[in-house]
Image (cartoon, rainbow, N blue to C red; front, side, top):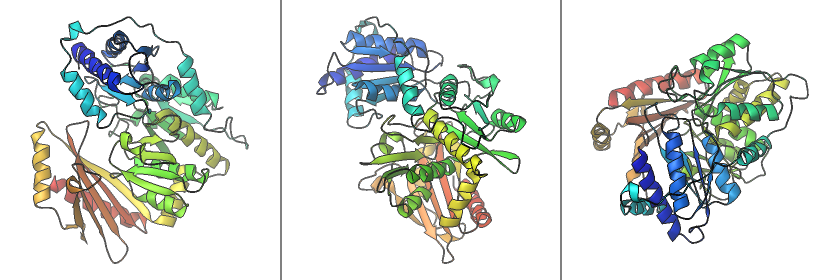
Length: 477
């Protein structure tokens, strides 16, 4: 990722847009960025190349959350949006994220056509560029108005305001989240000061992903210190949201699947019957069971929000286990940590007024649908070839049982409609236990990932089953 690749990539994007009906030169393109090393220069270059190609470019005024760009594309009916960000990757990385005119992430055939167009671009220093002045704060204010409109304003009616602990993980979402929380009436907010201001070096979090072991230690320590009701962690570009809760005084971060089920139950309760919810093939099976019981529809997609938000008509909610949640597809057609945090806090406040917690919601769901427990086993590699070799070995000699339960394997490389490099094992026992494992290469990191889920009537039994299965998967990988 350097200036030349950014210039040439943007020239290819501009050339593609010129070939698409209604998105030719003169249409609007939104450009935003995070606060990483190089992001300001890369965003300015992208904006200038698009302007040089004849587009009206809206360059966001400062480092802002990725969901603001996704929102702005819809709001302005733009032809495309570009966000310079590496999300939760380490400090040395950067990236280039593209939204199409429908407000969703890039998919085929547009990705191949843009790649082909990039290949036809000449030297970067010969690409035309034109100056672009940064926009004002109007789009940021419009985004805040939209996401804050999703929740009821003000503390709960019983006068028990929520105490919230927050970390921005050295990213760009801290101030936007605080502004949003204040607008809807939350006042008792405590931030991890050492991680609040954007810092491209991520000094306290070398792997600034809230899912990484230890990444949220400072947040949980603060939550315990101030006796918070809930803890919220954003990833560096604020498109993901992690949630921490206290169980008998012991703080822990909820798994993405746990938050995904809680939000699904909450949003379906206030949605019209027949709505659609979506989750990915590596996410828990619980959301599908909730949807069926609540008179809603459920779709399972390939991994990534570019597929989730295109799951079908009537989509009201989508999530992936990697702490990504889309709680308002009509506002942001992507994962959005800010709006998800607002809805989680709204629910936590309403529960507190009734003397209940998010853990109580999980207990209710377990009582109705069985205890669903999950974990992830991953292997980081130095040589990418090792990932392909391991997948080939598993295809050639797949396990036939996991934790003592007979399983069948599905190879999604041969799936007729959801073709992807993944292997899925499922199985159930006569006494009601079930297991599921998905193994796939990561799309963003040099990792091979296994996603495990065990279901049993009793949480302890499900957890034991999961641990035995995880040990077996570690040996396989």
